[in-house]
Image (spheres, rainbow, N blue to C red):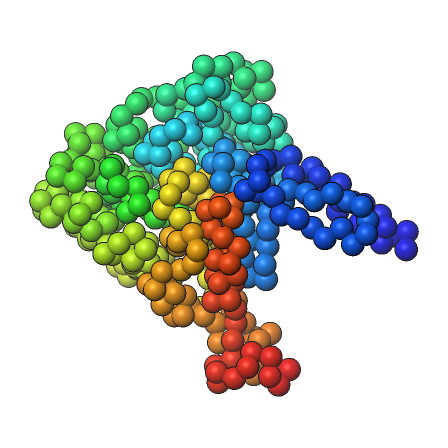
Length: 397
């Protein structure tokens, strides 16, 4: 009994500590007190058998919770080499910053705000104690974009080695990150993803891929190619593998034709943001290995709505460590038909026993005001392993 009591106490204390990461009614879930007198607590994570929710719609907090989920920071082997810091008010700059999540940084994107470095971000930097990237002269923090007042002073207090990728223009910063990554990693990837600088709902599925693999995200307008993007493509000597993400409503046919002057062009697109994200998750270029190619059971997915682009970037590290996950969009109250159809394609089937696997899982980022509990339950149901015979899932075992 003493061991059981100690375990319960430890869990209660841990829940209280974790609750400090989140705030607001959107993030609160009541636990039955079973007569213990414990008050309801705020749960940073809410799990079902096949899903885990990062239970906040605050991008600053979501980025910290994604970091805590992936980097336990208990030993040097599970500490990041570098952390990427960027502003929480510009999705275009934050999105291209995700290219630095990949090795050798092996670290999360965390946010500062116009007011400076939030306490939650500061506390996470202290917890992570980034080791410094060996191939990047021991840099521990890479700051991307315009820096809010006070951020650099706070970083100096932590005695962290900091590098800056400065600028305000998203296309220019994307080019600078492409060059920075090539210098740090020792190679310029042949492949690039080109997305609309004006249409986050079509561009952001690329963020999970660039966090997972070295290809960068570069920007175009619907009808024009910024000079910075042209220069990034020219650096590949006319031999780039260029993947446009999004339909012609986001990146025009004229831009597609112009991009052909810099390499081989492939468009990956869907008619709406839901179909577009699915198309990107399913795409695979067998000639070079680019793309998720997820068309069968046994995978992880990352679910968000289209409403907050900064949450999508905060959740990008879920494609880098653990059960690597592409971004899939859903609606607040449930999956649209195209997403439901994709889930049916991926639903695992077993012949003799569900212990055979394979299994699916999903990360869900956002509080219940963004993706409801019912919607989470629906996702969980569609990820559940079921008998190939179509019988009751629990019949015969």
